[in-house]
Amino acid sequence: MKAILSGMAVLALAMTVSGAAYADGDAAKGEKIFKKCQACHTVEKDGPNRVGPNLYGIFERGVAAEAGYNYSAAMKKKAAEGLKWNDDTLLAYLEKPQAYVPGTNMTFPGLKKEQDRKDLIAYLEKATGHEK
Figure 1: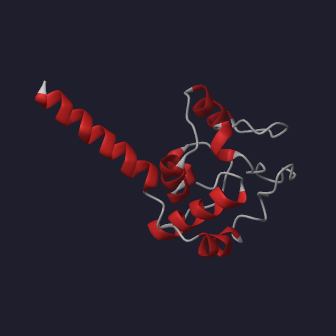
Figure 2 (figure 1 turned 120 degrees about the vertical axis):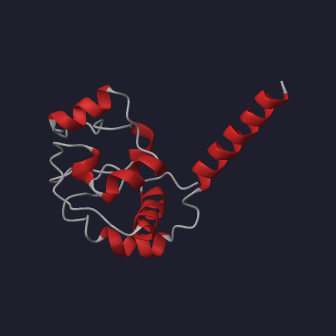
């Protein structure tokens, strides 16, 4: 019983750390990084889709769920598998989108620096109505 409780405590701690892992992201720096994204994406509520989908509400709606946007078959497959956007999935995806979702239409090569990705995620949380 003690081992089970210890295991549950570790799991709870891991979930807490995972949910707060990007608290050290700097939204102001992330806004500057987003300039690389804004040719294809908008973040404002009811903003238009461009080459990429509008990102407002991305943390609530899941993958490939922006109304009116034509997603790649690869992204639709990930959605059918239940992939949801959150800090962890975005951190991995933004490192190298083509590796995370092979066949995605997103041509952006990614952000190699983990801190840049954390900063961008902090900005997206703020700009898309999901600030923690």
